[in-house]
Image (cartoon, rainbow, N blue to C red):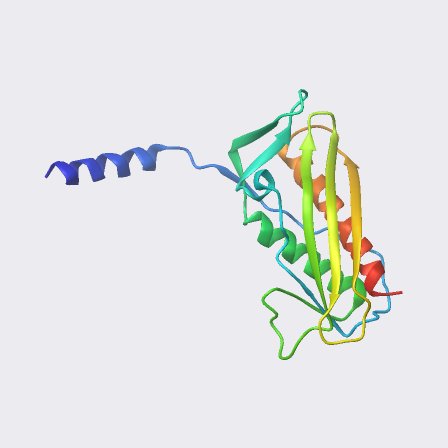
Length: 185
């Protein structure tokens, strides 16, 4: 009887707690169109720093720390969302088969793209930074393996969640265009 009462109390408290708002990461459109050098490409699940992989939204503070906003959450798992945005944007730019890992098509992709993010953070100083490396590896085609660093900074009008989301989308567009430039001409 006591455990049943506890379950009802917890359920009632959870029902009264306000739900966190959710923000979707939307892909930005590219005007870039390249002729692909490969017939297909797989984007491996993007590796994000711990703070960027959280459901809560992180922001850099004036003293260099990272604060977490628990009132507003990303609408999707950040690693999944970033991977799908890069996949979609690369497919649009290259007009070829681009898919996420696990590879959704029959056979192997010509190349795989592995993105390792070192920093993905909006800051109260009005900038969004995206930096790290991406690697292109030949899977089923004669394509030269390569490694590339990226350092992308996008201005933000303020440090609101909406500005962070918009700047992150803009930074991912720049990254997708950099990756596409290695896979097309």
